[in-house]
Amino acid sequence: MIEQNPYDLLKEDMIEKKIEWLDFLESWFGKSEYIAELGFPHRKKTKNLEHTFRQLLFFGAEMRNDVYSTVYVFRKMKYVEHAANPQRKHIPDYSSAFINKAYWELDFTHKKQGCMQDAYDDCMKLMDYFNNECRVYYTTGKGFHIYVDLLLSITKIELREYTRFIIDGLKLETADCGFIGDISRIMRVPYFIHSKTKQFILPVTRNMSLQYMIENSKTCFTPIKVTRKPLNLSERWGSVNDNGGNTASLSKT
Image (tube, rainbow, N blue to C red):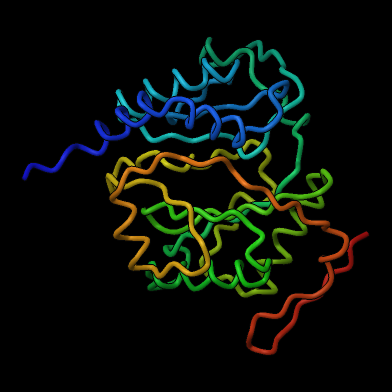
């Protein structure tokens, strides 16, 4: 039996299950009046749900590119007069970001002689600390992307401090610290394909083993709407235990 190309499977699913894909995209990007950017990896701003779907179908499934989106949405645009790329003259004003989530990227190459099991272990630490009230995605390449939705928006400084607080408190050895507080950051969109591994970005639950993730990332899944469990940051910003009896503390000011 000839195995079907994953990009053909993705394209077929997007066309046949378009309503489910539109529901997912609406839940992924949130408020429609705000602006986000897609990355293939070159950036394109979103316009409306239908236009976004068409771009993802073309660039992600037909052209077989990696698919990214900005972590945040933005309230307004700005004009860049001397942009190297004429198509990038009108870009989101990153200072207008609606910072309604914290995020971490786990990459096992950030640990000396690290492996995917190390990233998985760090991922489980985060899921346990947040009592599974976080959104986690297995990227199939080097690790995981984790998002914690927030009840109220925060500042860029608070985002940077909180992200670092969790990394240090839980001793996340595979955390990528190079982009902490980066409001313009783009990360992989789930259910699309990693161009190097040819596997699908997979949503993760606490009971999944690493082997289960590896095997199931080879399967094309019709996406489901994002379920958010917003965290009241002021109630949780106190101390973190790394399960080894060591704690880190930071007072929110």
